[in-house]
Structure formats: structure tokens, C-alpha cells
Length: 315
Image 1 (tube, rainbow, N blue to C red):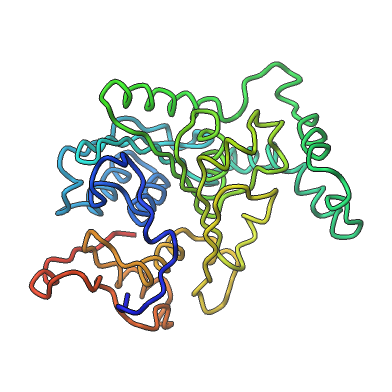
Image 2 (cartoon, rainbow, N blue to C red; image 1 turned 45 degrees about the horizontal axis):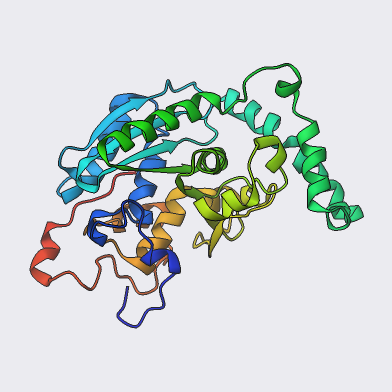
């Protein structure tokens, strides 16, 4: 970013132990690496993408992939231990299998139907939010059948990560994209853990169904919401929301929903404190379109002699 650039508030945010220096805590771009990598189909590929993206940075020392769910698991997750940051990151994948699509429908179809109906009748404008939450909560088939919620396996994994972190004096952070972002907000509210959700489904009309409160979401969740992205429009966002433009030339909702599109926007405006060069990946993603008018891919606070040491974040 140029010295006179106006930065997004999220550029200055850090996740992790507040007692550590800022460089030992994670940025939005750092967390974006985990939220992207967990989509990879195999454990080896997930770890390769994470390892490559942090190679040469202080955070890489001792970093390990502690656990990972099978690729077909609803709300597939990975837990990464980062000793240099005294932190564990729980990353939750979005919709990538047919079962995930069914989970989306199970958890949010009722709200989406009500929102669609409300376009013609202003239903959600007239009904108190508490009434809407009770209506949505009443249509929970798994609860009627005394079955555990769909997010139970990933919540158990996150609870274990939190317990392990507390035993070491570490913190735990959750991040996820799309469906994974929605599930991350549920987990954060249940477990009192900080969350960064990328283009997540909302949860504001489904508080009763998910067993959470508005206050618990206010205290734990940060949301990235790109323009033209229709997924975050489902339900209602309650967390601190960082709105960003979509730099994709076509303004295609699918492209605007992509997590790399958001990360490239942050790279353009925030720079990367780790000195990674995301320029080639972002150039390829935007197919030659001038996605970053300043055309600056290296943070200004890095000395010129350090610029030759940049390494790429892989896609």
C-alpha cells in the first residue's frame, strides 16, 4: 500500500495472544491461508499449501498440522499448532461435497425461504427478530429426532483444540469460508473463541436453532463481506463486518465469493507483514485486470534489500 493509502480497519487487526508483539499474532491474510488450504483434498496437500505459504517466516518454526478431518466430512476441519504464536488455528472448509450442500439446505433453507417471501411481503420487517428466531428454531428436524447437530463433530474438534491450547498457555482461533464461516461463528459463540469468517452464511435469524446469543456473536466474530457476494446475504450477519469491493471485472457472484478474491483485496490495501508476494497469484486470478491500481505488491515498510527474499503464497 502507498504511504497515504486509507487502510481497512481489518488491516490493523491481529488474532492470537494480545500479550505477544503484533508480528507474532496472525493477520487476516495469515488466517486466509488456513481457510483456503483446508479445501485441499488430501492431508498432504493441505499441509503443503500451509507450509509453503509460511516458509521463511518466523511463524514457520515448529508449526504442525495436528489433526484433519476426512475430505468428505461435513464441515471438514484442520487444526494447526503454531508455537511461535502460542496459538492453534481451527480452519473449517466451506461447501465442497454433496453432503455439504445438503447441510447448507438443512441449516439455512428455512431462513432463505422466509427471506425470499419477505421480498414480496416484507415479512421479516414486520416480525420481531425474536419471533423469527423461534420460527426458524422450530424447524430443526435433527432436534426433533434427538440427533446431534450437524456441526457436532467440528465443535468437538474445536473444543479439544481449545483444551489442548489452555494446557499449554496458548490461544485458539477459528476461521472458515462460506459454510465453514457460518459454522465457525456457531463454534466461536459456543466455545468463546475468536473467529474470522470469510463470506459466511449469516446466523442472526437462527440464534435459537444454533443455541447462541447475539451478545456471544458480537464478542467473538469478525466477518469479511465482499460486494456482489450473495452467500453472506443468507440469514443475517451479526459480527463485526468488514465490507470490501469485489475487484473481479465481471462482478460475477461466484468469483466475488472466492476467498482468494478477498485476500487479494487485503493484499492490495493492507500489504503483507510476512513479506510474501501474492502478486502472481492475484494477477492470474484477475486475468490481467488491474485489480490493484497502485500496483504495489510489497509492503512499504520493508527495506529494499529485503525485497529479493519474497516468496509466493500458493493458490
